[in-house]
Length: 85
Ligand SMILES: [Zn+2]
Image (tube, rainbow, N blue to C red; front, side):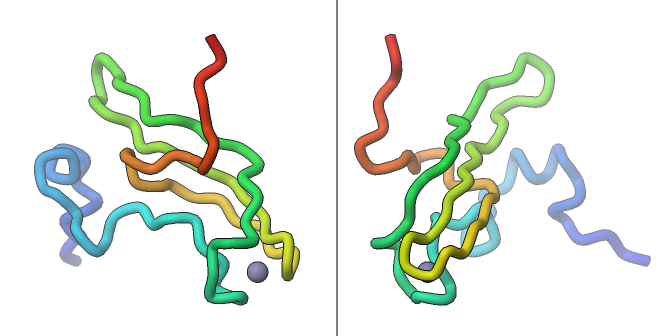
């Protein structure tokens, strides 16, 4: 059995995963992101031992009601997002 490269944590942090990395929030049903409401957003965090932890977002679609949540690209943040000081 050959493990896919992405199961190797060290390789995953060293090699850009273009095309196979976290996806932007998107409603597959509506084929759009314009109805999405971001329910929860966890910004990327820099961990002392494991390096950068991916950002995560949970969201639902106002139009069809679909709920989803997964890792998102580290440079993405919800529209209108701001840090509470
Ligand atoms: Zn939808």
